[in-house]
Image (cartoon, rainbow, N blue to C red; front, side, top):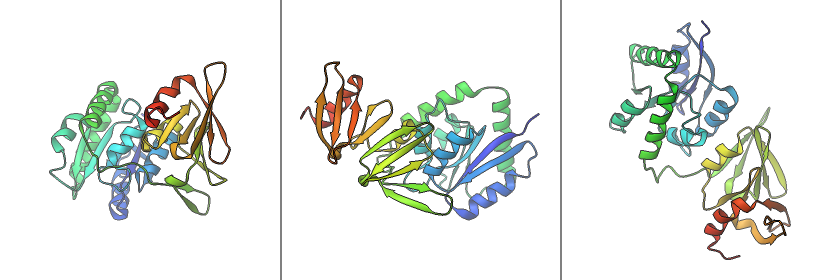
Length: 257
């Protein structure tokens, strides 16, 4: 039987290192990656397609719920939540997730959670779990969780930080996106759909299946005879505006155009 592929997500370096070391003791599990923040977790889940995720709840910028929201509950692998706060919605975790662990937890508690997860995956109970995750994300109202304020663009030797407010528009490119900001282009390994769910919907609007715009950069909407239109940005960039996407943009603009 092939080992289950597992991703570890925790913003505390020592906790993350400890989790990786403990999980690697289980021959039925293969650690395919570890992440220190929500953005890199979304990128890794989309790229690696793990069978199971051990996911920290409390993380800056994008927390554990934000990761699930970005991936989409129907596409999210089974989750074992990790939290430092025993009172943090544990009843909800117990009902909706594979399991949860409260820091500091024992080796035995982790082993029990992993055994339960392995059983759920191998008995193919994933559809039921996906619906429970959807219910959990929908029930947790977290206005303080916010949206991405910056995006880290990781290169071979350096990481470049792009402030979300500096982005003019975002373009889909296969399994990545291109961030167009101030005349520069930055490639991030995340899908447009996932990034859309991480950005403030009053600031960034999907205008086409392959494009989003920063509403503050919009200067003109030019319709055409087919019913579609072109969104013209402040720097003169022209982005297709699909007819089906126009109502969402109109709602944000208050029908100013």
